[in-house]
Amino acid sequence: MAGRRADGVRGAKGSVALGVALLGAALLAGFLGFSSTLNPIDALLGRGAIVTVPDLARRPQPGAEADLRAAGLVAKVRTSYSLNGVRGTVIAQMPAAGSRVREGATVDVVISRGVNRVEMPDAVGKPLDDVTAPLKDAGVTIDVTRDHSETVAKGLVISQTPGPGVLVTGEDTAHLLVSEGPAQRSVPNVAGLGMDGAAFQLGKAGFAIGTITPADDPKAVVGSIQRTEPAAGTVADRDTVVNLFQVAGPAPVAVPDLTGQSAAAVSAALTPLGLVPNVIYVGTGAGGVTSQDPAPTTMARPGSVVTVEVGAGG
Image 1: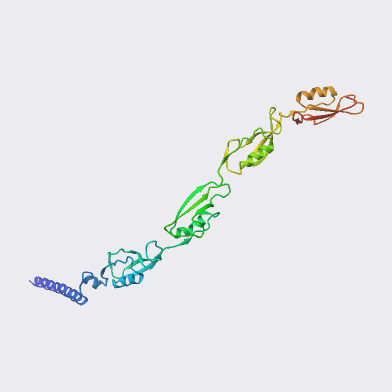
Image 2 (image 1 turned 45 degrees about the vertical axis):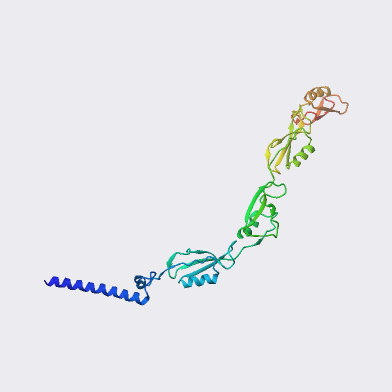
């Protein structure tokens, strides 16, 4: 029996406490002026009311800031160039108009700085990246085309439209022609030409002359170009070095040892090799070869002269 009385007392106390809490909340709501944006619980916890973000589009900056203050919100302002927004008015906001946020929240507001106008730079002869930065900042569309040029280095601007000094905005397009450098070209065929003719043709085509190496060719004209390296028809960059092989005549032969031989024997030994004997008689001229130039086993091209001295004792 006593236990039931105790439970009843505790139940009564709980009901009283709940009633007091509800009464306090009701009194507080009445004191603060209850609305749909601030409920008693938010008030008890110190939380701001729920408010609607106003529409700030096209509002002058002072008016937009005043609207936000009236709504209990904080403006965070930055500026930006705009093609359409009137200078000094709102062109963007975040959160968007109509959003529901707590009182005291921050709203990002972008104010127009008006249209950004810049002068076209004098771009010809300059690197592309150096002249496009200010145009990009102004929102100008940049149309780049590329072509080969024999006179303008790769990566530099060849021509521009509009010209230097013209005012442009984000509604305009700047056209820039940029060099790809010289085009590749084929090595010309200079076989059979003399050295002067070969050098002229190679230089005209944009190539440089490299080494000149003697070449054996019994059928070609001595002094003419036998071939090039790179070979004729090879596609290469301008200023590529081309090496030449110039005909020096038939292949060299070994000069025989003529020591002790007579003048007649010397002629018989050299003539079949294409070598030209030059016999010098010493003293009476009787006898055989006592000296020769070039020396035996020396490699000499056909047509070369071999000088021998023929004297007594041979």
